[in-house]
Image (cartoon, rainbow, N blue to C red; front, side, top):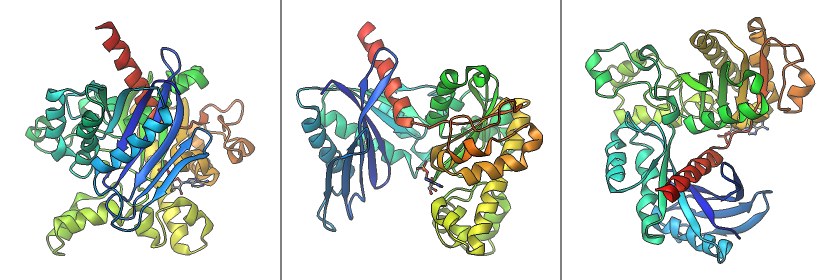
Length: 399
Ligand code: AMP
């Protein structure tokens, strides 16, 4: 094996990882990908190669496996040692949800940065602590290794005031209560890929729909983020697998006031029991809903598509027109039905779909001559993190 970059994406009960080998000055090649999930409960570890073949897999009985992120990381690193053989871990890249106001790009983690990242926990209390958990364990396991934090918010820094502020007293804006936007690593990767696969539109007016279990949309101009459908948290905007998306804040005041729900109850409802799952009562998974003929599943999909169409209209206003619409992430890359329905209703924007290309999940799914180009781009947040780490390694070598 060759010296490689380890990419970590740690959640509350899982750590996803990938192993990325440098492939020249500005490219990485994924060697392996995997995850350890159910930490503290029914733990399951799996690692696969780039073609999806299983390299290693372990399941632990209830209460028998790694109980915390430290021991979960040990499982990954012990497997990695065997996988890499004589080769080394060059550096570790972490996906971190929140970079606050200060981090407008990836940052090398040292003691001062580590402390700053900790200060951002109140901005994303459900995610940030888990993202940060492996940093100390990595330092213990690979002393002195370069660690880089890559943020979901950075790509959106620099939005205009009107796109970033809430119309509440200005002091809150100054305190950091702003629309940060998320999924930035995915949008950054897509913006970069567009320059390769569609240079004619890549620097124009583009709307990207990241439709996965988490879903958001982003308006790009000249390859830079202008506006995001997500706001202060990753709850705003589109309805998602289990998250509500946009909601009148008055509903929350009512639920907490007159209806007597507690803040943790409302939080749980908004993050875990809403969206496609909440509306359908069946599943958060689009594949299940597409297979179902239950009217609740049909209505949940209708809502999801309507929300995308509304956001598209709104983001087209933000970027001042539309040269390209891009679909990405699990639903965006795979659901021909969702793409077709979004595009059919938005034909007035100049979108002409090529039905056969759409059914085939082709890279370009608009008809030749369509005024708006429609593309499907496979996203890879891991690759984006790998590329950022590669840049940090090059800077380290120069310093
Ligand atoms: P992600 O979070 O990007 O992994 O996306 C997960 C979502 O993609 C889930 O709602 C899946 O149901 C959906 N998805 C994955 N494959 C397909 C498919 N072939 N058709 C429809 N939805 C899909």
